[in-house]
Amino acid sequence: MPSAPQSETEEMEIRSVLKEYERVLGAEHTETLRSRSNLVNALRAKGEYAEAREEQRKLLKIMARIAGPAQPEILVSRLDMAILAMWTDDKPAKRLQKIRARILIEERVFGAEHPDTLRSRGALASVLFAQEKHEESEQEHRAVLKLRERVLGDQHPDVFVSCFNLALCLEERYKAEESLALMQRAEAGFRKALGPDHPFAQTAKLGVEVIQGKLDEKQPDSGC
Image (cartoon, rainbow, N blue to C red; front, side):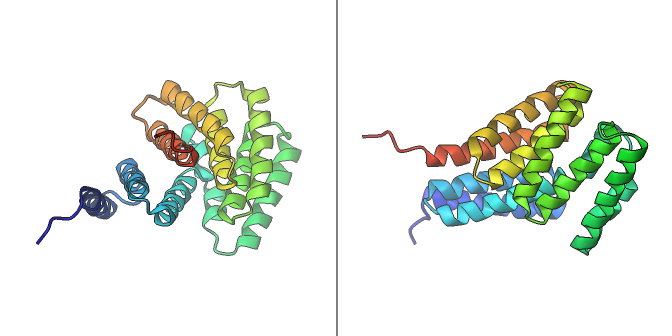
């Protein structure tokens, strides 16, 4: 019996590793995400672009979930259970209603530019993204990023969270070049602030690889 082509064998091996990582480490572990990214690249190499795009969509959705409302709180070592409750609510309209009401209260009590208010607005943008309201999510992420840069300075970890989240949103809206620049900024910022082995730095690094791969796919073949 003839052996399978190298590209097919590589894909089978990657799928096997991915399945084992998902079982042992979980779908959101950095190594699992990297393995799924390898699968995307293997499928592209075989010319199976539709399946590669589907796997990439799965990857980005997981990364978006990781970058959800809890992330800014983790970065500053305070977990906001109210935001987490909103995130897990199974009624989307109620979830948005709760978080918008929270923002109104925080704006009145703390002010529109207070870090807690901005975290809630960042959470709102992430919830909008999760509900596939990508245009609204982009507008909110841009507003939060601009305010965080002015209030916190351009080297604050919350700023890099905004860069990461906005990059994911822009990638989903086919704005890959701007998305790549923001993801690179997030990766460099997390690496400097938290160290190159921190999960946020590793996840942003993977994001750079995924978005760069999509841009490379669009480049015309320069071969003879």
